[in-house]
Image 1 (cartoon, helix red, strand yellow):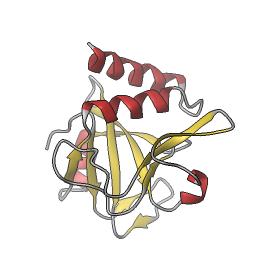
Image 2 (cartoon, rainbow, N blue to C red):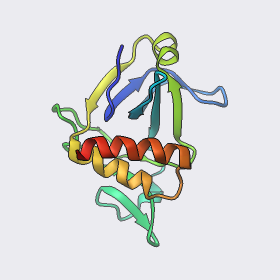
Image 3 (cartoon, rainbow, N blue to C red):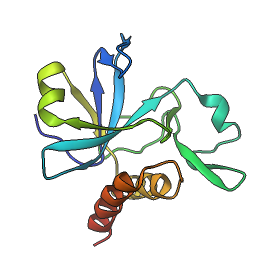
Length: 152
């Protein structure tokens, strides 16, 4: 299986770093792919809606600080007709991870694609994460490179 930057995949029974498993699976946003066959992903959540009170979607700020990105349920954000059934959030703090493609495909052979974000939405997501203040310098460099490719 190959991945595309901007793709949102569903990983059944995703295992977190602490060993716990999300039995219903987890959506991951493929932020970028590196030369060494690694993907940079951001985990999604539907659980932290209290952080996004009064959000109307998109990059969300609290006191001028970007804290994450909000995909509204039913919103057309993909290049296909898929939508999220629930409000879904990207929170960069501790949720941006690197995975080897071989690890994902061998440990999760039934990964499915939810959709690929439209170019406009993907640019908004990258910009929001880069400017959030919660992303490591190494990851910012990778995200900026991905963003510059989209803007060319």
